[in-house]
Image (tube, rainbow, N blue to C red; front, side):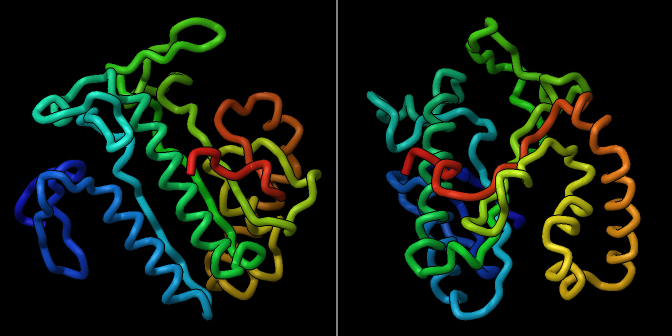
Length: 229
């Protein structure tokens, strides 16, 4: 898109190659969520892939519709104090997408993946039970590489399938958990690669679990669903 604009308040969005700027009181994430819900509804009767690289919780750190006392122009000012509100709103949006799948009876037939691509920004310090932790985005330490990786598909995986895995082993992991589906969906070149990686994955599972520091794959019932809808 040649022309820039906000992705949060008064968002400038490109939808199906058409660029539009919304009113100042509209929040971009509401547009994204509505598009996701509509897409799921329109494609519910056939297999589909919906890839959603979410704007939240990238900077600028600005207020959300749920933020208290967030009035113009303060809500558009970049301030790390809004980061927690952005995380909460992200959870709400994820919940809406899961609910959209549920409402069309596709929960047992849909694999939902949620993962991060890097750590938190360096301007953010999170208070944890072990003390404050400053974000390390862009770095190679655990603060820059420790990201969530959750897998949700009700009823398709047993508790024994819950395990630790590196992001780099995502493809062979899915190949091993759903071999028949992978064989039908992967082209021969990737299928062979996945089989090789899957074999290595099995051989080194114990060692990898001991040193893994990045992700947990979760599967099965409602207990793993996002909370803030």
